[in-house]
Image 1 (cartoon, rainbow, N blue to C red):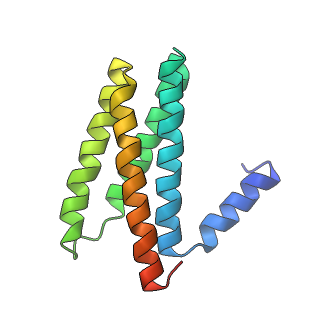
Image 2: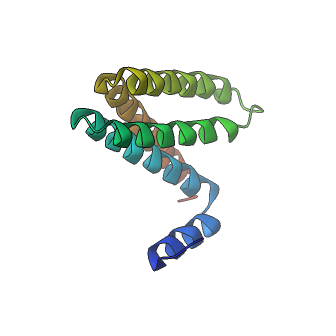
Length: 124
């Protein structure tokens, strides 16, 4: 149930966004949750680390499920996403921030690539 005006705004934004905007929003969420997971690891807050790294994993799984394999790049992206999932799992299991930090770097690069591609396509 949506209780706050901010949550209603977020829901409306997601429902009315273009496909490229939704993709960028997914990247933003994955980056945000991974950074929060790193913060949890660094502050020895195991629950915070686990919850946020699991949320990041869920978003990466969503990125995988959204791939269109009619395009060759999807085969490369699925391997990248699976690698990122593996890093998130390692980070969560070992409570080691280094793999999650690597995930943030890769997700940030991918996000910027999609932003540029969206601009070129005129869909942002």
